[in-house]
Length: 376
Image (cartoon, rainbow, N blue to C red):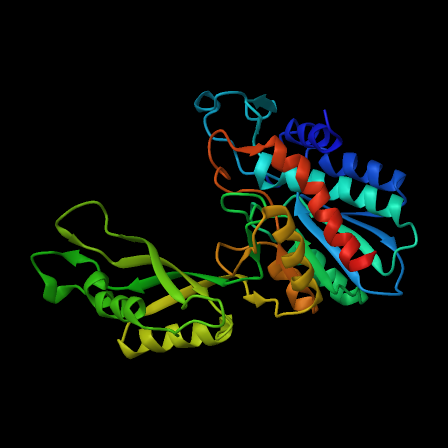
């Protein structure tokens, strides 16, 4: 077995369902210390975070960013093999976290070990930042670590996140940004009553329909650079007592905005409130700000990644800002250029999550090539 395959299997065998780490970071820290890294464990609430560094301040700081937590496996009987017993079948490694993202974390570690062994006096600083709160609420993970870094003046120039970004083959996509995400819980207040006497009630469903249509039908923008237009999607609507002869007293609506750098959360909130106010609703809004959009312009990091990925994929990678969110959204505001490079994402969060063994064994070489290009 290869070093990266052995480590990936060790990590998968630890049932680190968010926010649990399952001892993954302790295992990784012991290896990195042996390679000469200084390791700092940041236990915040119920979340484990690891900050490991090698080198000095005579050049840029490059961070390899990942997470050791995984999503729940779902019904174990639905899996072809136990999700926490890594299993290889026909050249494919199965297990929860194989692609998202214990394979990338293992590859980070192996690449970092090889890099500092070959370049003990490399320029700048190489760092790994790992959390056990990426798949959960993301409160005490990288979000809070970034606040600590800001307070103590940590400088991060470049960040490579190991999220599974590839589509069909390793290296065919380079993620150079992500949209922001803003979620809302809207409560519209009415007056409950009998459906036969609508004059004695106020139906919040009827009142909200035009306002909701205005939110959904608004064209927020025409996109930005390689970002698609901002989108508002309603994900849930609930009202009523369950009886068909009762006008409800309240309506609850959940919606989410995925937005590009034309906007920030404050301006979007103001725009949504203005629409609701214009329709005369009696309402309350609770917001959850998942993260602002980020975008990495052309520069040394993006050029190095494009060159390396083209070599591994055999073609120039697609450069994308699609997908959901990642922890890079908390690092980018520190002034870092951020990209995402990782294995094929077709099976992430699914039953029988998996990664090609060949791709997994190539991944440390891919990351190592980027480290040598940037810090060697």
